[in-house]
Image (tube, rainbow, N blue to C red; front, side, top):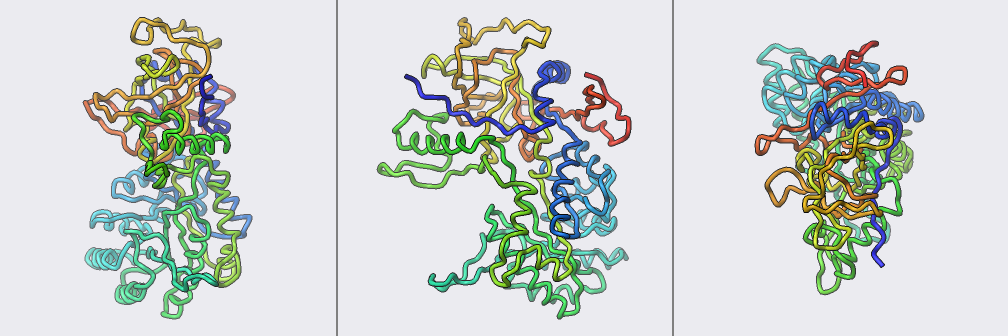
Length: 514
């Protein structure tokens, strides 16, 4: 008796579910524009921004939601956000090119926050256009102030990014103070005096409008400690004559990729068993995703994104704002309200949740020697086109057969590659490989289970790829084109599409009809 398939089926919400259900439309897009193909739903990003704003309203907070542009290169998504309420939605840009793109898509400088490592050109354009600069270090403040003076620019609004937050010792513990996870970004809180001195030195050129942090953790408690510490430091800033008004808590609100918690738990448990050798491998060549077998014991930590997250996105922000504060004893939302501070957030992945999918055509299906229900499936894409592995995201693609009951086409005649017809007798395990002549070009190292054997000409839809997956690592290796991107809208029940760069959030968008 063979083992039950270990599915990791995706979470699919409307309207993405409706788009995924229209297989003939998606096949027609790939027929016209090629494989791979990215498909975006611009209206969903505006709906997600509104969900974040609803959390602000629930806690009676002011401030702005800044989209972390690096999550996706799309023009359509940025243009749609530019059409949102200017007081409520802004954009976080982490390079000169992202800043230029945001401005060209309709954002004005006062809605832009410049983050990340910055060179002189980036700082100059940010200051010239009136963007807020989220300064990473004293050296960056010095460089910005020099540019403002040299070119006679108006005083530039700045936030300063902090790191190295401490927690108080736990009662009955070791008595030591615990640092938050070390970061190569930001100025450690212990060195904050250097920041205040630099801000005083450059008072003619920059104006402190707030404090910022971004912690690489999913821990609510750790983020709550940092927020509370920033509120206390804001009081310290006021005592030195500054007038900060905002706390920027960064991003990291997360996305739930896998629908069913049980499937995620079963798969991660099975991975440990496979590493121990008590069950067949679940991955290509026994890859352990950071786990290893040491004398019959599993060691290491799985380098995987928590694919099932019951609390993510706006819900995660709500939980953070509602949680207890470790020192002052009041929730972060209450602290912000009491001190009349605005709240800034920088969601990337969470703001483009359910905004799109990536399509790949099945090119070849080859039986493996591992058993009658194991196949190697080559796709018309490579690992750079859908960088699941780079971000530790494990989730099943959705099989969209060609020639389904609502599709007027005949099934493809191509066989599985060895003259044998693929069986349609239930779930099969497949290894998904890319179109590069590299052993390492695996779409995912995981053995993926599909409801039936795919055939050449079918499509696999990788769902919810708009955040960091569909274009973050895209490249032109072997001169292969990277995926084109289209924006899909719906008006009166009819789907319309256009190239991503041609989308504008106007009343009557132009594009081809389905």
